Length: 205
Image (cartoon, rainbow, N blue to C red; front, side, top):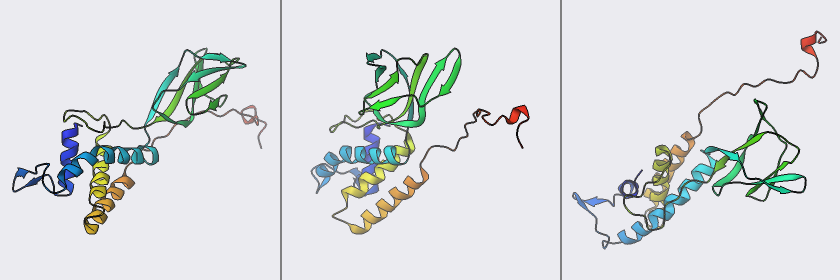
């Protein structure tokens, strides 16, 4: 979504985009302050949404590891937020498995035992893309439309927080309502479980 469209949505929520069909000039009342604050507020909204409600998983191949003692250390990408549960995966001899034989070191490194063979991937949640503080009108923010539109309500609410309590409450309630409807789709992942009790051999009760 282009920044010019994001800005128009935010200003439209607070009835500050146009007056009698004419676009509001930046010199009118607090318009310049609104315009300068919108990018930062959109960024805050995106972080709230995508680290708390709608986390975006990314699959990252682990390559070019560095030997550190009994481990091989891999550098995680800059947008790494957290490792998804069961997100460390191994392919060895054509067999894919999710395993827990790893250690996280700080926020940017993942340690894998040097004795572990195969190729590895990390499935992680990322930080959202961010707007620069002075974005060009044609700057494209690459996030899902529902996420961006929810963030516009957050930004609009923050703009009027100290000026109009009713508008703030209404916009923030709309933001929270949209937030509650966001989230990853419901999926099912089937996997086999080792027969540790020997039921398949007829030893079960």
